[in-house]
Amino acid sequence: MKSSTKTLSTAAVLTSLALIVSYIEFLFPLSLGIPGIKPGLANIVIVVALYAIGERPALMINITRILLAAALFGSVFSALYALAGGLASFVIMALLKRTDWFSTAGVSMAGGVFHNLAQLSVAALIVETPLIFYYFPVLLLAGMATGVLNGVLATWILRAVKSDPAIQQ
Image (cartoon, rainbow, N blue to C red):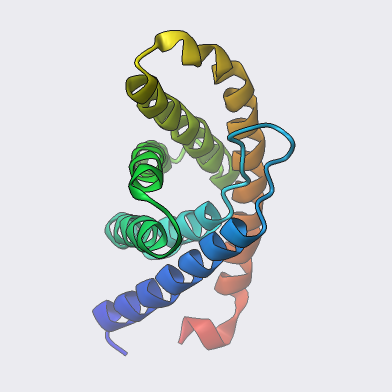
C-alpha cells in the first residue's frame, strides 16, 4: 500500500475512533466531581495520530472530530469551546513534539493545560468577565493530571502499534 494511501486510511480509522470515544464520553460524562473537568479521552487518539502519522493528518483528525461531535451531539457553543481548546492544545503539542525534549506524556500534559486555558478564555469572552480565571488553578491541575494520564495511555498504544508486525506491513 502506498504511504499516502496508508496515511489516509489510518487517519480515517483514527477519526472514527476519536468520534466514538467522544460519543462515549458524551453518553457517560465523567465530570470527576468538579464542573468543567472531563478526562478528554479523544485526545489519546490525537496524540497517537500526532506521533504515528504526523502533524497535518492529526490536525485534520482533530478538527473533523470536533466538528462532527458538535454536529451530532453538541451545539454551537460546544463547537466553539472544543475548537478553541482542541486547536490550542494541538498547536502546543505539535511544537513541543518537534523539540524532542518532552515525553509523550509531557507533550499531552501541555496539551491538556492549554486546552483548559483556551476554553477558559472563550468562557471569559462569553460571560464578559476576567473573574472566571480564578478557576484556572483548578483547571491547571486537572489539565496536568488528565494530560499525563492520556499521554501514558497514548505511549502504551504507540508501543503496541510499533511492535505489531501486522500493522507494520
